[in-house]
Image (tube, rainbow, N blue to C red):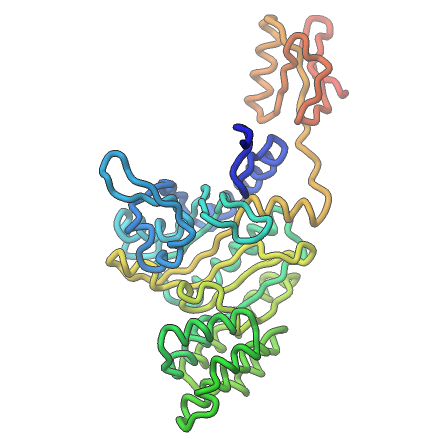
Length: 398
């Protein structure tokens, strides 16, 4: 019999020191988003299941916890991703004709962890821009992600770029059924060249010149990975196609501007990356920390996200997990020094209590030591103390 205080697998309490770091990350990222003009929204944790799993959210079905609403009898879901909810807000509650910039931060819940050490309750921060189809929106969201990560201490970031239109154009030219398409996508995502050639064997040996060219191009995609020079190789190796040409031109444009504003960020390409293939409709990106070698944030363009809500609008955004980000920052270097605090005795003395209130109103952290607990350790690093000197409460260094 398990102990009552044990939590389910891949769920954990966040204790004070870690919670303080995560809250600092949340504040910094939210402030950065608001500096770009993004407005904060707070969707509910629970929604009707048919709303959560509509449109691009349908891929989240296996990741979504389901329960019955005791009020209506309808099936509800615990959100596994916030983006479909923000798309609903844009489409039905705000209903703006122009650009809408929205950000959010809150927990999402997954039925299964994304990895061996991942939490099933990520704390998701994200930003979404609706209403502009041009590359200016893609660049703005990308720069917000990079600037936000820089604000919280990510150094030597690595930016990985791709575009869903490249693989989609080739798969469309191939003209295979859903099952074959899924097998090809799985092999592409794994960069398994042997499995990919097996999945494409019928097309590679067929007589239809267009399908043969598309199949050969798909076998080349796993090798179109590396530095920015991959774009030149792709232009030479992939067949002429309007979507592919546009995608490569757009990636060149994004690279040029990203290098100008973030010269310290290393940029790479992965044209076979199908992360969220049913989700993204254009440029997609991920940002990794060079030291941690893990994805810290990911995003891109997903213009179909609002279609199911009756308002198809251009959309681009990114998201990250604050819990994973906090752990990555800890593993990549020493934690920043805690904010200094002030230690104060507890007493009914009116002067002392007034001094404590005044310091707190100035933004200082003042920890009052309760009677009998004078020697207990604190989460806060106190470097000053309130002491009574000649009838006045004054600060002295510890």
